[in-house]
Length: 130
Image (cartoon, rainbow, N blue to C red; front, side, top):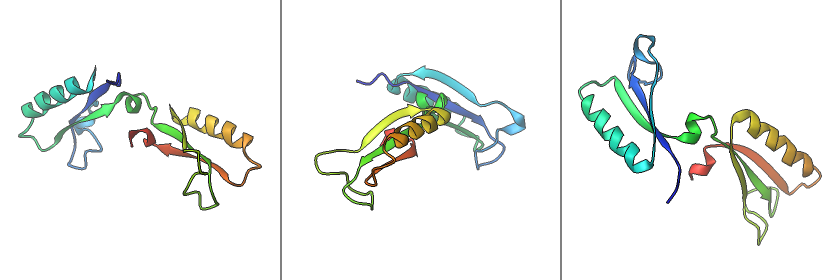
């Protein structure tokens, strides 16, 4: 069982694009919860607002709340298409990081491998959710 925490995030929005909160309000953040409790809370809060199309709540992983949604992914590849890792080696993944920390880590790891044409690392958003 994972110790990952979740939040229920949302509120009443200005329109159904769900990008801007109504009346300049602040986003509601409830939690942290373990996943089953987060789902239970989400069901409870959405049941209370089911008749208002402008209200929306979503489950959000703790890493997203903290801004830690970036991963460094890569390694040594079989060829320069960078689609298949070298036989016997898997894709390396480091993270999650906040954006600035991800960039710093990427710079560090790519500086060490700059002379190797078959090694590549990328910064990916939400890669660990796969």
